Image (tube, rainbow, N blue to C red; front, side):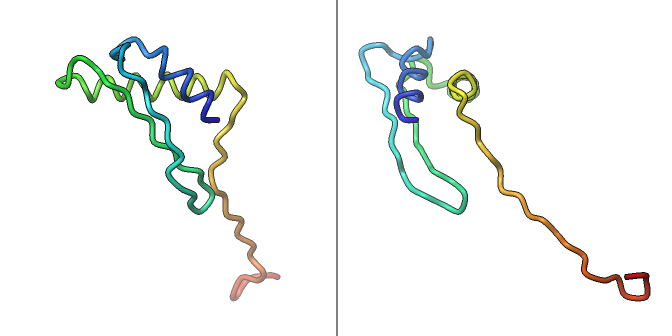
Length: 86
């Protein structure tokens, strides 16, 4: 996973090439493995757009590598309904 993220952000067009990107495994949560990805860019005023574009690059790299992100699910079973038929 780290290799996929690193390759993806290394090719990010807005990245300053002489500054290496950083991909860190920062923790584990409920149904989560947490990473932090950082790149240096030229234009701090465009950081929101750069972040959006970087997220698209990461999303596409995960998809292209067949890495899926499952979201937690909860099943609800109704045993009986008060006043209704069981």
